[in-house]
Image (cartoon, rainbow, N blue to C red; front, side):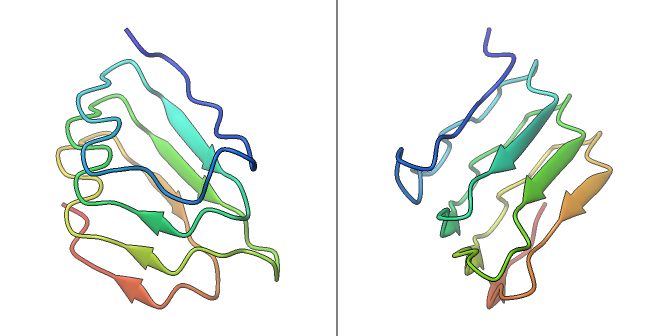
Length: 92
């Protein structure tokens, strides 16, 4: 089972819907500055996910967190968002 994710800045700027869905052993994730979109249901069912971190630098590209990106993440207690986000849909 997937228990950690290290997204490198040269990986890209988004991942598809349900990309990490049901990764129940994933405790936290940190996104690089160039990440632009958190897709629909990207972390759906990640029941052990407790922290999500986005860079808050001026270079951060995140603009959108789509519907239900963190649906059923029942232990999520920390979500650090950048200042420049323009769209935040229903998280659960």
